[in-house]
Length: 276
Image (tube, rainbow, N blue to C red; front, side):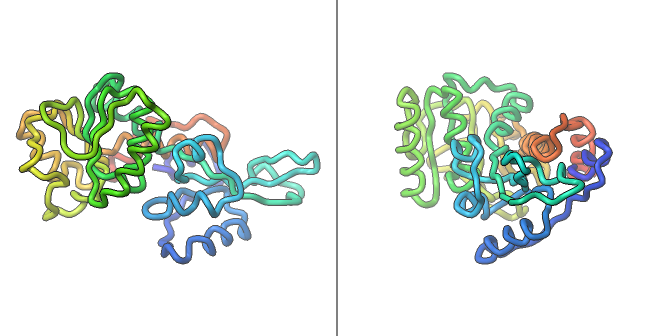
């Protein structure tokens, strides 16, 4: 997806994947600074710890308390911070890592496009509040959902997110645990579903998929997770996280390049990779 977008913009860049252990994240980030990378994306489990490891946080990263995109910047002679790739003739006097979050807006955009869902006033069940799940909880609350139900393996984590939402968005009704009655959306932010033999990410004794009008699984490989297969059988509208992946990546490319991302070209590359 990113390399297709980079090629379409005519940039002499390459997007590569590196596996980094959590305990080596700080050293890895220092390496990108020393090597003057253009930028980078972070995925699980690095997004929250990175907020304390970058030099500066964009408003998006401060708001959602997670970093998934970093832009390497240099300070010029006028003490203005610019993307590092703009320094062609002479190196910058100083370099910094600027952290952004492109996940949060991508979640909402994908829910609208792929599930046809308007979040304002909706009843939403969120499964998983760690990492991207915490970002999702804060972001859908900011959209003005009517009720938000949080389910997480570690209750204290869900309680902390609930307290933050009550502080930021007091009009949103928020509860820990499964709802009674129907919901407009069940949103899976856990990793359950990546493997074919994974159990469903919900307790079917406490919540039936027939209670949900729509089910969105942030996992996108396989294209139809066990949760989505069960939801389709229960008559729910279903969508996976492909749209979220696309839009967070497109926004990241715009942050690095300063140019509009070729979204449809990136979508085609992504769908070819995921669906064959």
